[in-house]
Length: 605
Image (cartoon, rainbow, N blue to C red; front, side, top):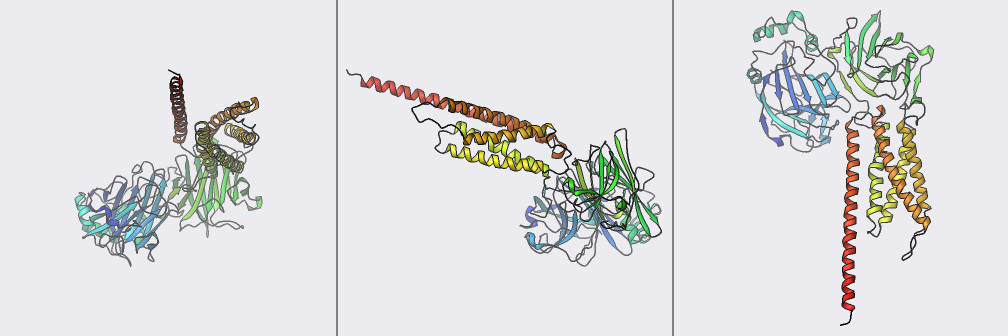
C-alpha cells in the first residue's frame, strides 16, 4: 500500500494532463528506498512503504536537477482540478499540502489538512530535494496501493516560488505492481541512506536503525514484515524512516555540512530543567565564521555568534544589513560559555556553549523539539568584512533525524548590494556607453544622431552616479573603499566620465560649411574621442576586477562572458568601420563618374 500522493497539479494555467499519460518503469530502489521511478531526465521519484497496526505511510523523495519548485500529487481522473498535492518552494523552504481548486495560481491553496511529515528540504547548487512521509488514509486523501491510479508531477527549472511550471505530466502507477516489478519481494523495513546518492548535496546522511527490527536476510515475507512493524510505535517508525545527521567526530552526536567548507557539530546538554547547545564549527580556511539564530531565516533581527580570530568569539545583534548594524553585545549580555576560536594548518575552529533560553533582552530561544531557523556566514579574512559565503538552515536540534534539514542562500534569488552595484555599472559600460559611441561614430548620416548620442550619455552619467553611490554604501566593507584595484579604477572611471560630460557641455562650436572647424574645435573632438576610448577600456578592466572580488559572489563564467562582450563590440565596430569606408568610397566613385560625364556632355562639338 503505497502511493505518492500529493501534488495534483502545478499547471497553474493549464490542465496538468497536457503531456498525456505515461506508464512508468519501476526499478529496484537505491539509497534505501523500495522503488526508483525516473519520471523524466530531470526528476527522480523514490518511495518506500511503511506500515504497522495503526498506520500506513509512504516515504517519498523527489530529486530535481534544477533550482525551482517541485510538486507531486494524486488525482482521481488525471486532471489538476480536484487533486491534492505536496509542493516544495525553495524561496522560503516550505513544504505543504495544497488543494487544486482551479487552473490559476490563486486557486492553488494550502489545504486545511496538513498531514504530511516533512523530513528533508535541500537546496544546494543545481539540485532541489524534498522528502516527506505521506499517510495513505487521511481526511483529504485515501490511497489504495492495489489499484492503478493517476499521479501528477510538475516543476520549474529556475523559479523558486509558485508559478507556471516548465514541465508537467501525468503517470499511471500501481504501488503493489510497481514493487513487484522492481524485483522486490517486499519493501525494506528500515532503509539505509547512502551519502553518495546525490553527489552535489550536503549534508551526508546515514541510516537510523532499530537493530532488533533489522531483517536477517535481503528478503523476507510480508507476514514477517507486518509482524515486525506491529512492534514499532508510530514515533519510532517516523524516526527510522528519516535521514540522520551522524557526526564524524566521536565527541559530538550531530553534524551538518552547511557547505563544502563549513561543518557544524552539536550536542544537546541537559542540566536540571535547562537545555544547552554545545557546538563546534570547522571552517576549511583561515577567516571569520558566524552562526546565528533567526526567527525567519534572515539576517536582520538575528542573534549571531561571531568568531573573529583577531578579537575572539562574542554575541552580536544583527539589526540590519550594513556594518554599523552588526553590534556586539555589552559584556553583561555575553552569555556564551567556553567560547574559543583557533586556527591551525589552514583550518579555523570555533567552540562554544549556549543556553537554549536566554535570560537577557533580545535573546531568541531555541527549541529542542521543533525546527529552528539558523543563518551562517564566513570569509577568508581574520578581520570583519563582507562575507564571501552565507546561507540559512532549518534544523531540529533535539532530533536531527526527524527535523527538516535544508540549506539555501539567505538572499535566495535576490541580488546582493554588491551585485546590484555591478549590474548597474555593467548596464552602463557594457550597453549604454558603447552604443552611444557607435551612434556618434557611425550614425551621422541620420538627422537626429546627436540627440540620441547626448541622451544616452546623459543616462549613462546618471546611472554611473547611482552605481557609485551604491558602491560607497556597500555594507561590510572594511576600511577604504578605494584601496583595491577595482575601487581605484572605478573611482577613476567616475571622475573621467563626469569630466567628459562637463567638457561636452562647454565644447567649442562647430563651424558652418564650407568653413573648416577652428583648431580649438578640432582639438576638443580629438580629446573627446580619445577619452571615450580610454574610458571604455578602463571600465571593462574595472568590471573584470569586480567580478573577481569575493563580494560579487559570481562564478568564473561571468569573466568569460565579459570577454565575449568585448570581442563582439570590437568585431561590430570593425565591421561597421569597413562598411562605412566602402560606402564612402563607392559614393565618391559614383560622384566622380557623374562629374566626368557632365563635363564631357558640356564640351561643344
